[in-house]
Amino acid sequence: MGNSQNGKEDMDYDQVLKHFNFNQDVNHYQLGNVKIFEASENKNHKIFQFKRLCQSDQQLQQLKHHFQQRKLLINDHLVRVFYVMGKESVMCSDASHVLVLGEYFPNSLFSELEYNLNQKLIFNESRLWFIIYQIIQCCAYLEEQGKYHGDLTIQHVYLDLDGSVKLIEHDLIPGGMNPFQKALYNNEFHAFSPELLGLLQQGDKEHQYGKIDNATLNKTDVFCLGLMILELASQFPTYQYYDWETKTMNCQQITNAIQFLPNRGYSTVLQNLLLQMCQEDLGARPGFQEMKTGLTSLENDILSHTAFYRSHIK
Image (cartoon, rainbow, N blue to C red; front, side, top):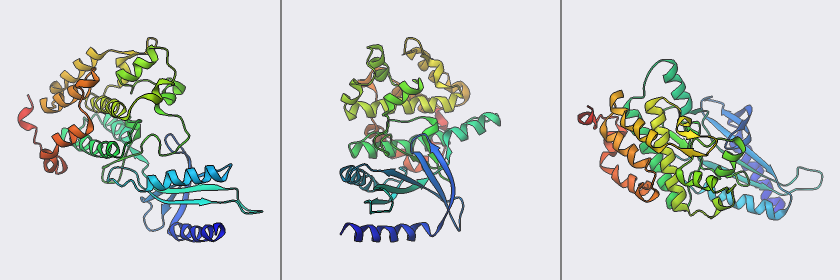
């Protein structure tokens, strides 16, 4: 039965890839080592292939189950996994492995920010609301599924050809470092919330991170989103708000930077939202569900890039 199933999956895999050509191997920060393929008829349409060897049948089944569950997650702003294959080893053939195909978007908000900096342009406020809205929609969906993003930075907000947001949550690829471990490994804390910095101040290296509930972790994502939008609007990097040696942040400096945004032509509506998102007090900070509900009445204006905020620009 196992060999029969493998044969069917191989055939399905060949059917999918016959419309694509190999493009390159990439060491992706969130996906790891993957192969990139581009569509034969449209080279802008790209997919990634992830393959992991398995040491046991149990590991094979666990990984396959993980990716099959991930395949069920469907949201307009979540990178889609559309093919999962688990292949058992056969004598004189490949070792057991799991193979996954998903959407791939090479462009990111970081690319857009760099372009604006080089061209001496600022982000149009309607563009920022568009980004905020789409990220909130995706993160609220993840929260509904009992998950959290955990890796929100400008580099990890991917863009399709229309400029819409596409996200990859921190644990799409299982078995890797969690966000806390990544920060320790890379000595990068400039997207950390006050809660996570608090763990470092207590001397915790990662043990307590695994005990934090999803509701709290989603609110740390809210803080990171606020900082990210502040960086796009102010065009100053977020690391300036952190002290690397003491592992602390200057929350007053963050507040001052947000309060200065109207001087750059942004509305007090955007300013007030960022002030709420970057609240030092976890309890006072809104969650994604709350913000999603709050933006419902503005949905049409945001998606049509209407300047609903014009009367709130000083």
